Image (cartoon, rainbow, N blue to C red; front, side):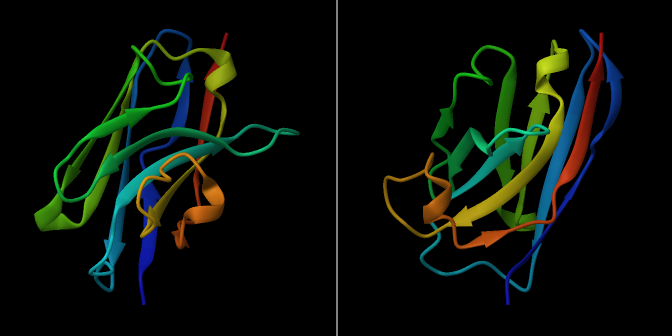
Length: 125
């Protein structure tokens, strides 16, 4: 059973940085395609932030992340990271990591098979 646990969220002022982690326990599916990050702001739908191909480390970024966030992974630790810089108040929300086994669908949350519980990120102005 894949279990994902996010950590690293918190409270930061605008312009600051946070580093999120998502550790998978219980192993990862052998046909894993990507691990990704999504976020959900209060009153809004969950949106895709970034994803990384588990096999070869190719990174994919959504508009909220381009130029400010960096996704990486440590295969030995079954962990994916999200380094966030130049944070803005609109980055506030709960950040979720997920695992997808569906090829070519890194931005579609419906194609993610496993999810973590989320970690809160709050950016003050």
